[in-house]
Image 1 (cartoon, helix red, strand yellow):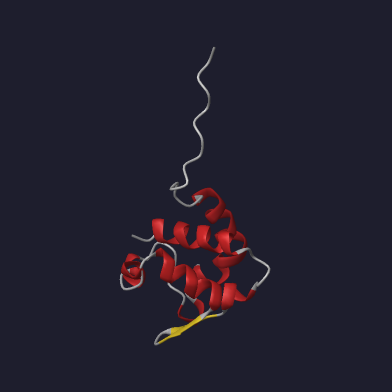
Image 2 (cartoon, helix red, strand yellow; image 1 turned 90 degrees about the vertical axis):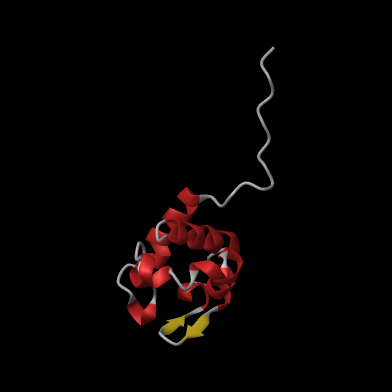
Length: 99
C-alpha cells in the first residue's frame, strides 16, 4: 500500500507562481517601469530599504496603500478586487526577484 501523500504545511511559503501571475496581470504596469516611485522588479537597490521591513509590512502597504518620500502605492495597485492572499503572493514574488 503506498504511503499517504504529505499534507500541505501550514508554514509553507507564499505561492510564487501565483504571485508571478498576479504581478504580470496587475503590478507590472507600475513596477515594470517604476511609475509613481514603484520599485522596479529586479532592482535590488530600489528594494534594499524596503525588504528589511519584512513581507508583512510590505504586504500591508500593498493592500491598504502607502505614500512614501519617493512616490505612492494606491491600495491594491488600484484594483481592489484582488484578494489579499493574491497581493501577498505578488509581494513575495517581487521580493524574491529583487534581492
